[in-house]
Image (cartoon, rainbow, N blue to C red):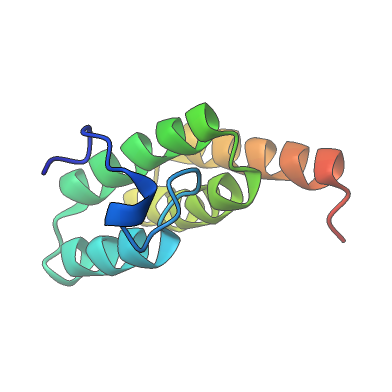
Length: 97
């Protein structure tokens, strides 16, 4: 079953309205271990969009954190700063301290 297909809640152990962050980070780590930075970027871009669609701010903050590290590794200052700004906006809005 592809990630785009929907499962009934009783068919899956994962929450349907949250980013499966542990699974995402495991997949990200597998890409980084192979130095497959393009796949790592596609993975994080996909899950950033999904987190936004789901309204999962905690999941989004986790994804942004991983993006910041990846953009640093890619020397992509503009994208890194965008991720930092998005993370700060979430922290201020949610009053994380």
